[in-house]
Length: 293
Ligand SMILES: N[C@@H](CCC[C@H](N)C(=O)O)C(=O)O
Image 1 (cartoon, helix red, strand yellow):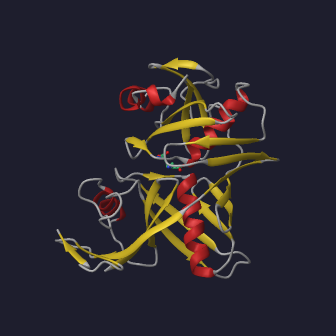
Image 2 (cartoon, rainbow, N blue to C red):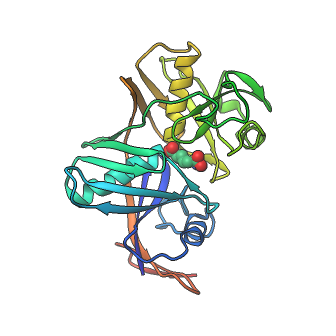
């Protein structure tokens, strides 16, 4: 059986699997576990997840190093995930007792710091250039109509199209996001993030994620994208910006060459799943421990 933990960061939830375990088909496993109807749940919270984090913990460094691979509910891999990387750091900190963790992602090595209330991670500097996002054109995309949204394109490890609206709660994201997510100007697609002023100097956020192909309760790279786009468009001059997705509150701080993302993480439950013909699942602490499908 394969052991797993379930974590979430402000509602963006992930199964975490130690990559030392033998999983031959990661794509198939992620599609299976993450399904919101037939995936794994503990019976108390939600079923399924926004992705599976395969984490390889490497010893022998001054700070523990964890190589993170995120496989999404559609089987694709994403080069970066802000909330996933924060959960990866919390997982590695639990295992090692260390507070500073280096998270290796396909978009670079990120330094994370774990304390009693939150995990902070250095995300690099958001980039607007067409090469970085990437865009299928030679100029940055800044507040231009794409579908029904006025979008600004920014790379925060993954591509985001950010649109500022009056009130995010009135947006029918499942309708307006897909044409932007698949627009020709984004050769690798884009996550679609809408934001509106929260009345206290920060922003409310909602994100439709590539790979999930739906809205998630939080998106860390999206929060950084909102803060960066707000600064670029003169919507804030603050170095520290609070961004609130539906699942909680994230802080984005700009310091030197880094945007630092900070917010809580939580370990929800742990268990084991068998691979093979018929799935069997054990959830720790569950009286009726085995659930066969
Ligand atoms: N939820 C993540 C972003 C995950 C990657 C995204 N779905 C993509 O494919 O680009 C976050 O917290 O940043």
